[in-house]
Length: 262
Image (cartoon, rainbow, N blue to C red):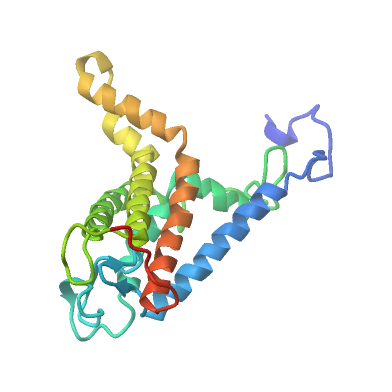
């Protein structure tokens, strides 16, 4: 029996859509925003400079684990002298993988770049659809593992925000605008991670009776509230991490001076 769009009795509409509103605006803005971030992140990743202004380190380069890191910015040497490229190319693999496989970002770039579909009630240009059952989209299923790595980086970036309460000589009890920038960056990344769909499933999934697991139920309820704003946290954290990198870069390059509060 023929079903779907070819079912008998369905009207034959050749137009891609009958919508008269600006349905294309949302995917266009999304595509432009994501493209701008990718371009900026790529430039900064290959720049290999202006990422450390004591005590601030760019989130794109933290933790710096190669021997070619700027002195003072290194956390632990894992990649030896053989690594000649930018240290950011090692680090960005994990947060980028987490974002690329994120459930919200899948929707965002499926609609904006692949037009699959570009909007509700708008037909897509593809003749066939295989979903995420074949290569390369089947790799989206590793999102949960990138989530675990993302939590590790959140801890590291939170540590960076804490040590930003030092001055250039390493003395505690100081704070500047860069401290506030890194604190907000860490907070937004935690909100983005904890509102993740995978996080919601981890804390409350596979339970038949919430009444028998009151602690996990409270956790699931909290994460569910955050999950309702996952899209908002995704965008805020994306733009802020780029802003945090830009601020550190401008201070490190001498373009601006860090505003010290105390």
